[in-house]
Figure 1 (cartoon, rainbow, N blue to C red):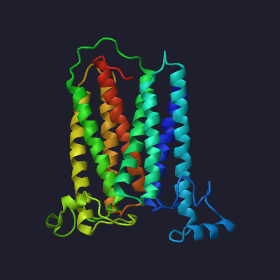
Figure 2: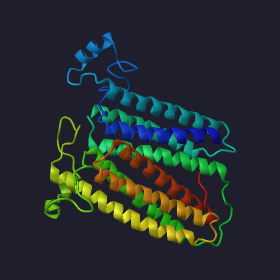
Figure 3: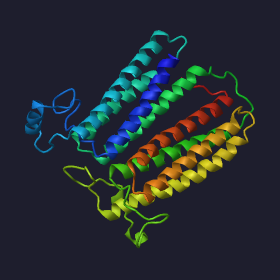
Figure 4: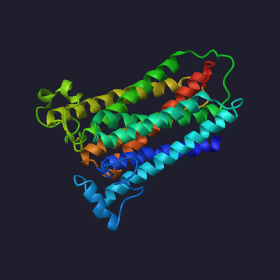
Length: 328
């Protein structure tokens, strides 16, 4: 069970990175249908290409984009099957394994598959794309939480630890999830390069902010390459930058608080890890702006965001256990 969950965490991490790569290479509609690709289980080639182009004249076959999309789907499908297997094992050995979380994961991965379908059928509708991103992070976090639950028996009696660090951890998790969501919204609307200067936007950016329209969805037949105007995209980007500042300052302060929790055996290591991963993430975010969104840096920005989330889940889990808390 532990090995299977560990493997599923690896798969979930790969799926997140492949999803970012697919999005950043403009391959989200590399296959215009779902779950196949131009009516096939793989990317059409040879004599099948002409038939595919006739069936989808508005979206002719681009093999490299189609493969990016299909490889992402293959890994996501494998992850779904592994999660179903985990739930089946948990149900069969419910006396020793948690059941609620594996069953929740099955429901979550089904909904995530539906979001993947809607991403294609609704032509990259930004709200769906962002939800699909957050769903991937949620699956990864829940799998990691399940692994922690399997490795640590629930505490039966609370310690004298204060509830304050745990509450601060929950606030930190909420801030981080919001910031990831802002990043997803910025990416889904192709606003990552709406501000090319650093540390502030170019020109009279303060006079061009448009919050109401930046977080709305304009009517469009296709949302590939974005449907918002420049001012709206710039506003998304600015909000994401300010969110990064808030997230950085809060998590840095939280790391200092964690280091002082004497009951937490790994308090200093946890605080140091949080600061290091946080610093790497900020450096990658700045590099995206300064170097005009290099593909490798942008994909790593997603991967390190997932890593930062896992670090926060790990710290939150142990702070909860200090108070006698346990997870189903």
